[in-house]
Amino acid sequence: MPAKQALSSEPVTKKTLEGRTVLVTRSPERAEQFVQQLESLGAAIILFPTVETSPPDSWNECDSCISSLNNYDYIVFTSANAAHYFLGRAKSFDAKLSTFRKKTVFVVGEETRRAIESFGLAAITFDEAHNAKKLGEALRRVDVKNKRILFPKGNLASGDLTSILRKSGAVVDEIVTYLTRLPPGTNAESARKLFSQNRIDVITFFSPSSVHNLLSVLPKEFLSTATIAAIGGTTAEAARDAFLTVKIVADRPTADQLAAAIARFYE
Image (tube, rainbow, N blue to C red):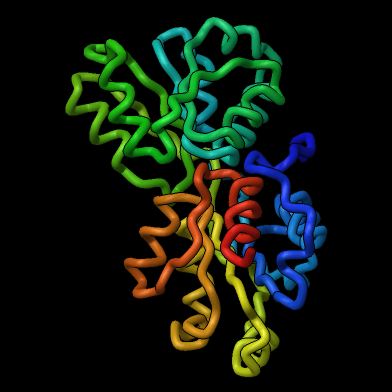
């Protein structure tokens, strides 16, 4: 788990979430710090993971790219999961992360940057690049024409970044480094009961997949009684596309900022 950090807005010391129940759709291991922050503000937490990640069915394509890493000018990551799976594979595959230190790595968001740094590598972020599309637009200012770019990603990643880079003249190789799915054995009956009793005040979403997967087991009507909170613009857009009303969006796409945004909403 990344090191604990304080909420980046002004600290909220009063129990602004006292009496509120928050449904957290992130996996327990990734939600630990977020849950602690909300509990410190008085919230009751219900963990209901809607996303599970796993390695790809085959590492062949990934291994091939790792072996030919010197052929790439840049590497881009749009999620912490992509970084952990790809760099974890690279470390076990050849144990030569020194090759990566010679590469320019661009990432979306602070969590992805921290994931890169956990492997002893450096990454470049852009303040305005809060999602894959914005990163593509930011990279237009970089000389990407005729550059070879490696894009490790999840199987459900948007095609916006690749499209923008290719239109800018870059050669982009996409490789799937992890799979996203609804956790097997997910039982929505308990969540249905809580929603039917209007006991859920806030639903937190951390990715478009978390939105889609929750809606695959719970009717949209159940969610209409709760306040929807999204970690960033891309996730908020996915929720709105599913005809959900989003009232809380983090200023920056991090769990810390989402906790701070929820606290401000109820101040």
